Image 1 (cartoon, rainbow, N blue to C red):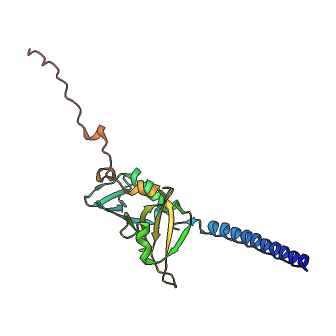
Image 2 (spheres, rainbow, N blue to C red):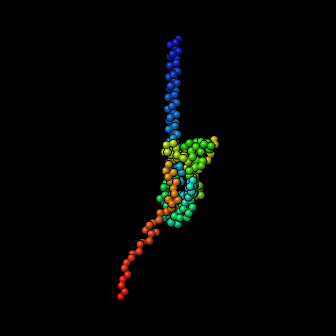
Image 3 (spheres, rainbow, N blue to C red):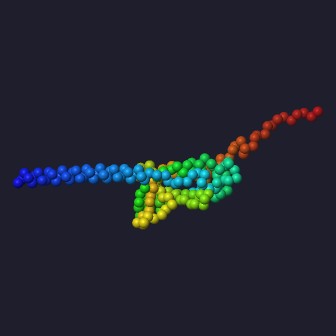
Length: 206
């Protein structure tokens, strides 16, 4: 009788171990598939679709408009100053908006957005397209190992009341946190700086 009881216990332990292994493999596989499915492009528009950008940080709000009257510069700053914009700086940000991907997404309650640095955010980018559609990217703080930034795009609540938080490249942080002077077009020194006058001797009068 004792032998039968021991055998039964061993059988139950083996079944329990097999169930645990099966569950672990199933869960791990689903988790891997979920991470892959969450990695997607942040926005679906192209660079030529964008008419204007508004970049609001803790220090300033920069408004940029596409320059439709000239090929260079492609962008003009309209606020806080009305000057030609630095195309290279704007293109760097635009490239991130058009080609950037989210590594994965997190579903969380609105009350927890502060834990991701999203209330208040470090920066908000408002994008206006030529077809009058509007998009928004809100940037929060970096994750614990500074590989990604927490972000929101076109914030909307889910049916369960939660909101979606994305993990995006930290390059966005470098793209928006700039001095005002960096957003301005760099003047061409050959055009803006007058040539020095030559002090040639006056020819004698005849």
